[in-house]
Length: 430
Image 1 (cartoon, rainbow, N blue to C red):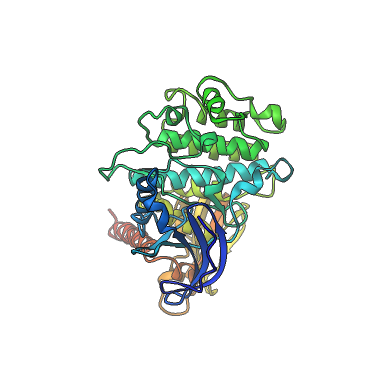
Image 2 (image 1 turned 60 degrees about the horizontal axis):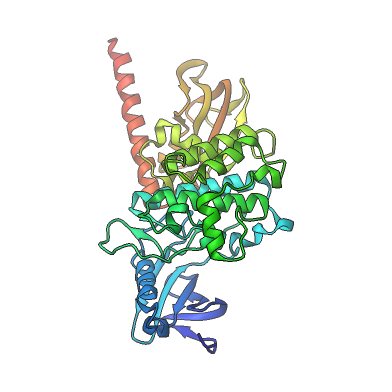
């Protein structure tokens, strides 16, 4: 593609700067004046659609990605806001993530801490599980298609090569990056989500060791190695990699489908357990995002919350340990937060009289959110058994997405009904 002058505007989006360009597209940082946010706009060259050899393929990739506008809404997937296909202008408007890709962390002299890689991989597995539930297999998972959103936050991008189970289009070969392809993909076998699981294993290998599992001077040699050879164990390249983490990587990269993780759920559960076993308590990350998400998934209060809503809760809340005897709330004091017990037990008392014992998964202080007036605590809450407390400031919940707030409203309504029922039973002497 010949070099084009920098654009001033793409459709209704004023251009701020060119972010990058390749053989088939250019990506610009633009401003969305209607939603008051910066966006990334990928402009696809119209010339490539006329290419006699691969024009149809490029058109399919564009249509694939454009068709997902507004559908893949997950905190760890780059959201596609809009897509436009015109005679002279084809572009896709996406969420802007300013941290670049994970490619920079694949260099041997710029490797991330192992626990950070595990946490990033966990978030990718949850995002790809979400896509899988929508019938979508990515097919081009690699560090260049995972954006760094700060800390351990990541966002999977570029679903142009995706297979969509809901569409009637046939699988197209020659899509993907050979170094990250599964044996099934390089052999052009029918694919499902397990090809992405393999690719995610290769991404972890690369991020952990600073090198790809298979090194080759040409694609023929690379394909032979992928299909016939075993990679060096990651710990031979980075000895501090724990055996549990190494086992996860190698299982994800198993050549035989029967030996590979059967689904994203099993992959993510192993990553969460590895993080919890190897790093929680050994580092300052007592309540890392991985641990928060997995804890929330086990609590009855959040049973009806989606993955995306659980991530919202994880990000809006504060978590801490509380020893037995600590008073968490005092009667008559103002309070602008409510709590959910992640672990342990607390007692609720009023003027010294025991009202309730609350255990793991139960909420308290919710009137801070439900009350229309300035909330005041109506009872004392004291820790009776060492506890882990999830605190959610009511202003944070008020700024959450509508679906997330509605799930809280429903959960609180169920709690109120249950407590009123129990109170009526006690009053009636039944």
